[in-house]
Image (tube, rainbow, N blue to C red; front, top):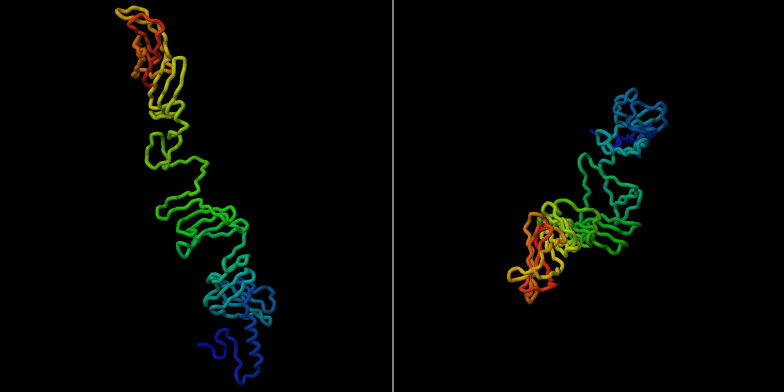
Length: 373
């Protein structure tokens, strides 16, 4: 039950009817008000009174205090009239600890950090002025948001799909990049050179997860992983084809080669030499075209005549121990002569001309078909 002679909250003594020396009671109340109102204490962890103290000096007594302050833990020690007076705090009392620049609040049992009870304000400016649009404003070299034992999330929420929830990066207060949900529910990155005209760099479809690059992409490094072909024999659908695995216009003509049974060079190789011209395909096929040969068909052989045999050295060799066919041009349109040819080895063929009568300076050529690998 509260004392009817004192105020219910601060315990200030009332002036009673018929009381003598009312000034004593009045001054006692004033001393209590002076000690409690705008409560600012020197510290809160002192276990014993200071060696010297000024009149009105205040401390929150440490729970471990002893000596003259024994049993006064948590109370407010006030220096009044050369002695220490101890005041019991009540729930809701606030105190400023000068040595720590800290606000405390009493919960009815103990003193607690006054800032831990929560802060609610319409605007808040840290080293800067907040306004109606920027209700939280921070001017600092850095801002730290860290975990409290687990992870940490920064949530930016918007009212609806057509609204914006994003991070806007500025240079001298002019927008240069924006990242987030800008006017839709597609996650996007936009950039601007002047803060007025914006270009979308990328966006992600929330339904499919597909990434779109509407302005294109410039990639200076190699692309790897399972999204690209793993070799020339890789025909997996929807994979990016590496240049070394693809047939490009620049690699259609050139030097053909095989590696592990797969083409490793150009698609077609064409060349020439003393033995004529040749064409090679990447699958291993080779065709050689001979130069035009001239021969005198004057040696009688039964009822016909023939020339001497001569050797055609191929412009490039064929693969050894592989099928090889040598086809003659079979003379001219009037069939005044014809040719016979047969392969000797992978390097050459033997050719002879034949005619029904003795003739001079007959011409013809041959084609050899086989494999180079």
